[in-house]
Image (cartoon, rainbow, N blue to C red; front, side):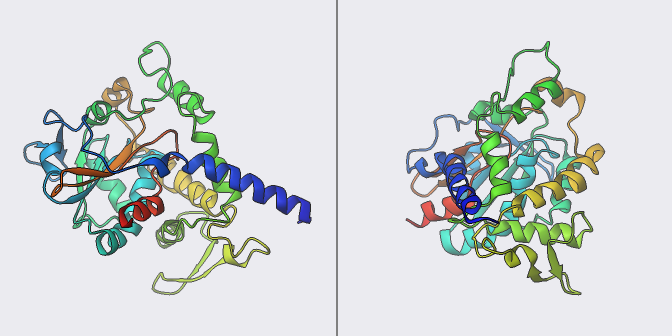
Length: 305
């Protein structure tokens, strides 16, 4: 690559990195969000009666993720990130409870957890088929959320271009150009999970007979192989997720008609970390677009400050 082209790539990467991560840097310590009230009840995947979200986060240091429908990129990436960062959040940030809410039926939530190898012995999964809890908490609802005359899939297509989801394009483009400044350590792990499960493309990593990573081929790229996040690395994972999960497993993961009528196809997600012992919110994030989920590296840095 000519030097001028590389410098353009570098500067463009810096720009989109800043755009994608600007909001995460302002998550500050505060009292619990006023939108987390006793009225918000969540249904455990394991069954039994609904529980109050306010009560669930009131005792321990808790990470709670407001996911999307099970086939959605945002739900997938929250699950993939949680799988990788959970032990780090336990060890370095003192989080002892992990809740993950999905806007789907129980079978779809179970299937998603299996597809990403999420440790359900450490993660409490909840389901809300119509996404009512997320709406009450204040997640983004996407483009034209209240217009029943527009097909939800057309709304979703508009969101891919930033309508009602301004951060979608920066987040997607950032997956292609990489980031020379800040790592996203979960990507390699998620690629390895996909490789072990036979999802294509499967040539980004070399795995040994036990499925452990031997070589990440992106690290061998000239000039950019030493970047914390290499160009095309995240884009390759997203292609793997789209083909091997969202499309291949659509029948298992897709929202049903009742969920579509409730608007979950375009509903975004978010997360918060609450310290129940001091009654404070330590980190809070609402997704501003498709693929623009919380940066767990930023979350960890914030929690360790």
